[in-house]
Length: 188
Ligand SMILES: C[S@@+](CC[C@H](N)C(=O)[O-])C[C@H]1O[C@@H](n2cnc3c(N)ncnc32)[C@H](O)[C@@H]1O
Image (cartoon, rainbow, N blue to C red; front, side, top):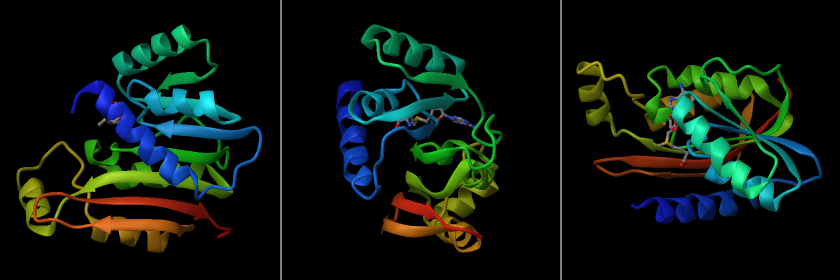
């Protein structure tokens, strides 16, 4: 998939999922693993949100900043690790993460961080690839530095968390499945 096609694809996904969110003025929106910032920028251009994008890769952050400066849209891009976000507890109304957790070895820690920085009643918008059981076992055996994301562990995280489903679809396949969802943080 080329870059333009990828951008259209993720913005289409974003538009589909943001429909599940009750929108108000001045919501604080955080994208974790923003890459070159396409969704964050699109969001800042089209919604009345205060947008921040973080990514661990300084080159991605630089490219997102340069892209934003050409549009004149106000978005803050920061270099940060999803497993150690530089934000207060319950500081964001919406947190989005697309295609990131399968890049993070300790991906469940990133999900816990996202839950921590999300306000009560806030929304977590998520999409990622999921390994089927046999492939996950092989990946773990090879001690991959990638995140071995599985539906079972993702669901088990949700069950133990303060997040409840607003919308969730799970696709399974012998190669890679995926989970897409919008989750809302409830009071403990
Ligand atoms: C496949 S790209 C997805 C980028 C963007 N979300 C999108 O959908 O186009 C994965 C991104 O996650 C970032 N990433 C990987 N590990 C991370 C971590 N621990 N914390 C924050 N970002 C991370 C990578 O640098 C990369 O930009």
